[in-house]
Image 1 (cartoon, one colour):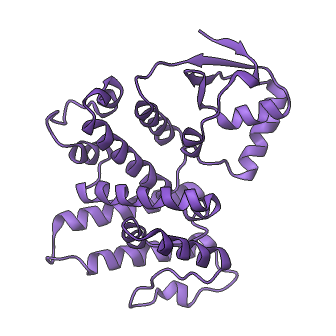
Image 2 (cartoon, helix red, strand yellow; image 1 turned 45 degrees about the vertical axis):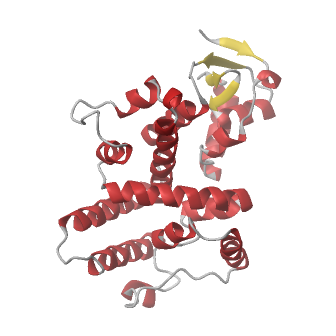
Image 3 (cartoon, helix red, strand yellow; image 1 turned 45 degrees about the horizontal axis):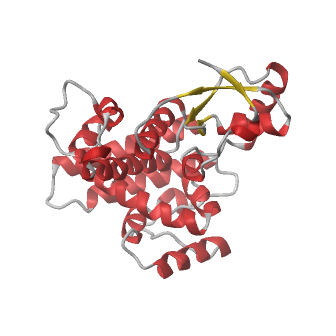
Amino acid sequence: MQLNVNHEDVIIDEVFQRLLPPLAEKVFSDLEESLLKYGVRDPLVLWDGILIDGYNRFEISKKHDLPINTVSMEFPSRDSVIIWIIKNQMERRNLTPAEVRLYRGIHYNTEKRMVGNITGRNQYSEEFLQNEEIPQNRSTVSKLAEHYNVSRSTIERDGKIANTMEVIENISPDTKADILSGKTHITNKQLQELSSAPAEEIKNIISQIEDGTFESRKSPVKNDAEANATEDMPQWEIEFAKMTEEFRQMIKKQSPPNDTDVIKSALRQYIEMLEGLYRGI
């Protein structure tokens, strides 16, 4: 049932809000224009009075004092809400490859936390993973690997990346946004390694990013496109070259040689990056 509520009655939760990537300036502007013209037609979603879907619409409606409607959903825990938010974002958003990796990692870390808490395991996590082709006695990492059609190692890597991004966000939300948007290039391997690094090391990396002195690790063979890049070269072409070189290096460093699991994992990551680039053009 939809309810008409006052903006002051809606609770904002920073953790939930951070799960929702900010809209690009043009997209936000278009949304604002639409809401001013037609009103807030879609209801905002609440859990125990906390906003869990519709933060951009809420921000715009509050700014212009537009009336809003809400619907309430029931969840047994905050972790259940997190998984629900991730599901929504993965289905509805045109996400960058970095955002996809982050969501998978947050989902994995959340699911592990819920598995460790017997009372935390509930219908919402099970429904999200439900797939008759996936044996229900398999581990969390196996289920999520099957669900997202990636390798187990990819899910575990994404979990480490999510841990690093959480620390980065706590220190500098802007740096996190730059990494997710691709404005700042930092390799997946670096993000993985930083998951177990001292806080001071992460702060140092952030400082380098903020003052423009940070350099992502370069591969032994310099990307030809990067070496020959000019100012008038399309950004998508430069990004494509970087992605291709990253893929080549992942294959080159595989051990043992011709490991099909590694090749499949590298190909899947490459496809995800290309899909993100395609959506961004």
